[in-house]
View 1 (tube, rainbow, N blue to C red):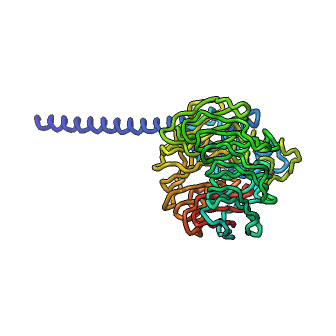
View 2: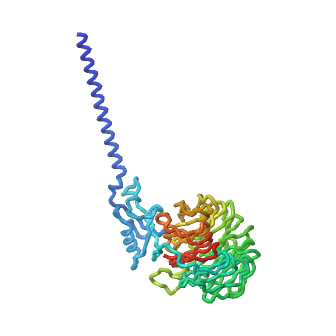
View 3: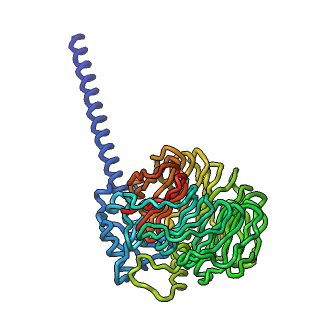
Length: 510
């Protein structure tokens, strides 16, 4: 009887454990189901979203339509182009680029929608930006070797309309070249020392050149003859030249120069006299830029950038932050100011060139300045209003030689002795990518007019063309026999010119 009682207890015990296990198992399944349902209710998966509400904004911040536009999630770039051009009421559709959270839309909208996106609450902000009307093709071959200089070619520059090419050399001459026959056109003689820098007037009718003696000459590109007399005043060599923008003065009378003597001078080129001296830097002034709003920016080895008012020479503010020499400056409006009245690639030619030049400048938006230094960093500034930088951009391992904004103002490219080129977002200074391929220092860079390509010249004797969509090498261009000091891409996008230590100017085309 005792054994029977023991068997009953054991059976009851096993049944009890089994019931508890079943209850626990059911509870776990129920909880998992509930959690899954909650997750599904809270955040629908992207593949369940079929439409989104979006708002189109220009890159200057203007909202395109009154309300949000409902778009299918699989809307691609072509559909966005059609819709945006319709909202803009463009008779001839403009090529546009679209950005969501600073990332370019290249396929459809699905990949730009986050996991926590709620259809009822979120409106997607799509930034649209007009692209160049014409598409520039990458240069792929050397079409001409222009010989004539007896020393290194230090600077090369295409005229604002892309029809003339000039070069300055250590042989004390400035040369003008016929880009169509690829032959020497004129040799401009007058300097008695190395020609360090050249600069075309925005109207394209004058070329300024400056030498190590501190003298500045003007030349007529159509005759190769000197205009007026030499402009003397600087006590040491001239490091940089920049003209007053076309929309400020269509006659292009005034020219700014910076010098090793710590001064910036504004010249009246008609009288060949100094109009104003901007004194304040304590060491060599390395670079000068004349902005579109009437301000002049100067960079110096005293580690500062000074902002001057051009009309009266008043120092507006000093931008500080760099820990070593400031080597180079670039403005987001440089391309608009360079091409001035020339309507390159436009389908409708406007007769009022002054108005056109002003509209081109204003379409870029607020002026931004970027500075590159021997301290391996770049600083991004809003120099018209603020002394404090927007961003300090770090990453280079050696000094920065050259920096350029893309013509559309969206991207900054910087070239360094560390053999790399780095790309940065122009509004925030955020790092985008590094372009590696050169095996020695990169001296000079130039953008194509449509901002889709970048060319670089290096101490390794090559030019390289980089694709801005893939951030990869597009073309490797050997040909020079020695270091390449200067490169320029013509504003019409057709050709690239390069010059360097081998004394030869080379032209590159598709």
